[in-house]
Amino acid sequence: MQRVSLDQLKKGMVLFEEARDINGRLLLGEGTEIKSSHINILKKWGVASVCISGEADDEEDDKIGINFELFERAAKNVKNIFQHAGLSHPFMKELFRLSVLHRFHADNFKPPRSVKIAETNDQNNVAKINLRNELSKKEIKLPEISTIVSELNEVINNPQSSAEDIATVVNKSPTLTAKLLKIVNSSFYSFHSRIDSVSRAVAVIGTKEIASLAIGISTISVFKGIPEEIADMQLFLKHSLACGLLARIIAAHNNIPQTEQLFVAGLLHDIGRVVIYKDFSDQAAMLFSQCAGGDKLLHQEEKNWLGCKHTDVGKILLNKWNLPETLVHSVFYHHNPSKAREPVWPSIIHLADIIANALGLGSSGERFVPHLDEKALNNISFSPGILEMIVNQATHQFTSFVSFLTE
Ligand SMILES: [Fe+2]
Ligand SMILES: [Fe+2]
Image 1 (cartoon, rainbow, N blue to C red):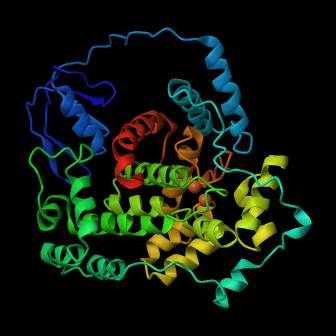
Image 2: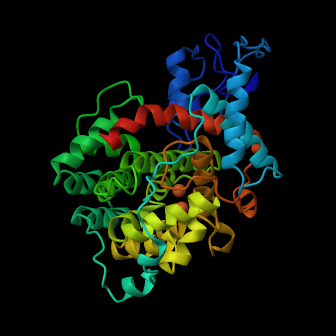
């Protein structure tokens, strides 16, 4: 018997014991002979390793030919986007290596310059503002969210909630129901038989998980309407999705059962920027110009032009929507999780954001990999050794999930 990581798991190996996901759901029985579809199922459910009968073969994978010139180009560009993050910490060194490999294979060498910088904006004509004051005086109209979200919140917070309670709420919106069923029937979840109702989805996946997924789908509508000349909404959505998927996987590796709630926290972590891009497009354009000229980090320059950061705006917005405190807390502290009273969830979002930026999976406007708060790694016992597996799982899920949220 030997425990092997999913990267070492090959077709034909036999499971020594059953494979279950973080929530204890049985995925494959003891004695199963592994097929490629099984490896996909394990990856999609965030399983890190399994026990197999006998010994694993140490046979090396076939080496592929590498164009060294292109590889060097990818490395040079990745070094540029890592300039604020540094490479001294073993986590960042390993992330740098994976980022070069990922961008080289994805043919994506450029920094995530998603934003069109306004050339005509004259710094003197754009007023610096105190956004926090304006928000507290309610001079800015924050986006509204459907009443379904607050009803879903009640379902999450009530331990007595049944499958029927959540089905009743979700079924009020035919669009939400259709999207939810499309996702649970996709290869992302890899169920063998078709799930044709919300109650059935709740029975199989769990009440809180389905409610969280429904909240994520409902809040995505707020991202629409980001002005094209300020930011690319598709890239913004992709960055949010990548962060959500990474957060979900990191949570699973840390035996944290609220995987879908962390998915939503990742999905919404930069939502404050949506308000800034929509309502303060002049200041946003100036921010981008300043960062492009001086190679500054966007989130650090925000305070100069807006008097606060996108995390402050996100907190005000999510509180207005009455979303759970754990979620608001994770969003508010995602750039400095060691300052959080409860640092575990913010640390997960912090690392997910850094990884998503490093790999160039979408962009919320930031061109560089943000600083690493090293304490985040201790808060969730994250060893650089598992980073490659997490990146592989996330990029695999990203490809199969992206169309559901961006179409
Ligand atoms: Fe952020
Ligand atoms: Fe982000």
